[in-house]
Length: 397
Ligand SMILES: Cc1ncc(COP(=O)(O)O)c(C=O)c1O
Image 1 (cartoon, rainbow, N blue to C red):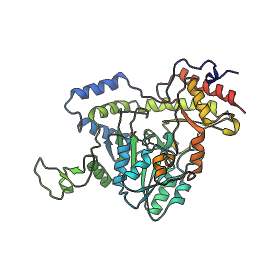
Image 2: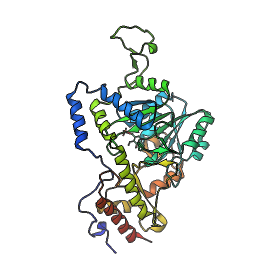
Image 3: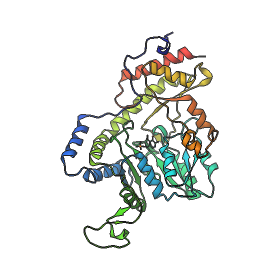
Image 4: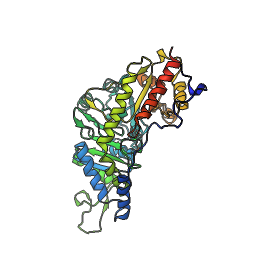
């Protein structure tokens, strides 16, 4: 049996690999350089072209490109009209931004539990949390797998709720053949460097609703409009624009948009490689009783952003912390996605208590995300598998 590096054995790799990273090629660099030499650094043609491209990819009628995924969620929550006294049901296993956007608007996030096998929001848990104050849901396509749209839509229709999909992980994913981005009332994307495509930072909201679209466009730029039909004091004076509500500066630059346009040309290639790596991992881990493999629902054709390695505590002598540290010592860097949001001390101060979502809490104690990104080589993937096998053998009960 091989001795784990953490106990003095030889590490599987000499050099570390991270759990996620961007892939930037010469074409991407040229696209940025050309934009820097052009007339517009912000508010220019690359933004419009990116919005058009996102509509093409998602089949949504409208896209609004913004500074990052958090800004996308904030504007979607504002456009949804969430405010004081409202409750919004949010996935419990997600990045804090998914529920912070509800707090930004003065509304209250209410956390729904996850399904124990897909790790996505459980529609049955959502149903139990509905009250007369419930105004909407923010459902996260966790790891890139689409949420259960049919079940969630049914709940939203019955209770007149706004459905915001946090698709920060899910560009390129389809549900029953329809791209994520054209299904919910509003869908929010993030283009942070660990995501499938990146603009350095970046985000977008897609929608099929024209009124929401105009509202999002205004909110992105201070609540200011140039459209006479939206003004209280309309005039055709060329210089005139009018602030009609309170908005923000959440604009993206044109050079980020140029990078994203170039990255999106490679989306199918990125997606295919990610799927291939997931299959390689699944093929090995599915046969190991010490590891749980994330269940994939047949409705979702998933461009996977994260690969979750979940330990079966009944079969191992170590806990997640020991396994995580031992993988690091093998030079396989991992991360944990995520702490149940309401366990953050900020949320604790707001009065949320442990025990709200038992599946989410159990999930959190058992997981880590292992490397998954386009430029991982087959050798890298073999190293990850080797390291996991080595540790499982050592810590097997
Ligand atoms: C599920 C989820 N929602 C929202 C965000 C926020 O996106 P950004 O980092 O672009 O603000 C992230 C980013 O990590 C995320 O993973």
